[in-house]
Image (tube, rainbow over all chains, first blue to last red; front, side, top):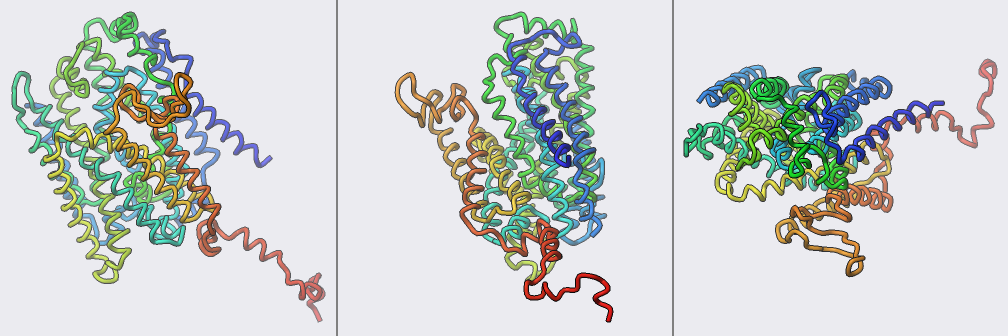
Length: 73
Length: 547
């Protein structure tokens, strides 16, 4: 099952990349999130947080640990 | 007057920082260009973020949001928030390791060694330098324009700091900072810059919120309710093809020489960890207020003469005067921060990839290389300043060049990916991809300047059923099939050239492949391999060795 972790992480990155194309918000201005943020803008603000979470997951589970050796040489 | 005083104070602070960096510096190129590969943790994040953060990101984003609406955030910011950290994670960390292991200080040095070819490095160096220079010139132009704008008091016809002086102030400040401090000074200035920006957004939004009668919601609802302005709070006028195409543009980031060189300067690879996680959040903190205030400006101020100055106009009207000064200092600092990195990167490349590579080190020694680099910095900044003055009227051409430079660097990303991850890639593949990119840049730039909106350049078939492959869209931008941006054919075409030419030509030597991809597989094969003539006589058990 060595392939499972890379496959799941690849799927995560692809899914997050696809989620950037929020066609369902294209023509929507409302609701105004927090009373002032148009929904399309609020979605992409939340998307930035999702991108940070995705990167945190990659750092945790796919960090290229072998590269750390280069610093010790 | 207050904004100018704040900016002047800031410039004095920058000069002070450059002076300290100078005193702490040594006289070898690794220290001057890479701060001795000692940039760590949070400093690395703040600096690499500032490297990518230009004045155009601040003024340009709010100006574009004023014109096109909230879609600008998704178009330029949120996609960068994913793609740039991904490139830093996958490419930046590998570049850092190769730099540590083999002493590379530029990506050109890596390409030369990886593909056992001097010429490929020189071609990529030339292409990168050509794409970087307009960016540098426009930074100085931007600095001059902003200083003139800020120093023009309300109602005054002539600015306190005219354009020529503003450009000069930026050029001198950048030259002094880089000339004295090298990478160390540039990095320290970047820390100031990013910290300033990260604080600015929230403070500006709060200040304007307090001063704006009715609150933000009232204005946004008004924009959404009016058929003429509704497009600003939706993306109904933004082609989905362009929106997707833009997700390829951030691939350019890691290919910009100053960005790649920054990756070499990290002390430990672990510095990349917090950088990739914090990067999207920093983009959110800086871009969201700028885009939001740009759109809000339509409702609050109506039609303005210069949309790129909308943020300054909003602050002018609704915020205390010191905040406008802080923004001015932030903008000037962004101009100088990115310009300093570009100047330093150009100087690093010229010194390492041309001067030292072609015999300068053997002839004049290591110390002379730092003098050469400093002389080059002086020369290039003076040239950029003179061009910024003499070609002010042609700023549009430089803007187009910069726009295409992003597509060009994005199209070079397949070269880097192949060098790092594809053993079978060859110098011929890299050359084909680089030449394809250069040809596209030239061709599209010529079309952009010579054709008019609506012109069709390539099409299949005739009449209404014709398939337009290349045309100029109503906004005057060259577009690819169905409205995609030219970055799409450039990136995929470059990847195809890289793959096809590599497969048709001979792979690099076994020694080079082992050097870059390790020889674990080879060692395993050798361990298991037994010569056929000896295999019969090889002792099978330990006891057979005992006589």
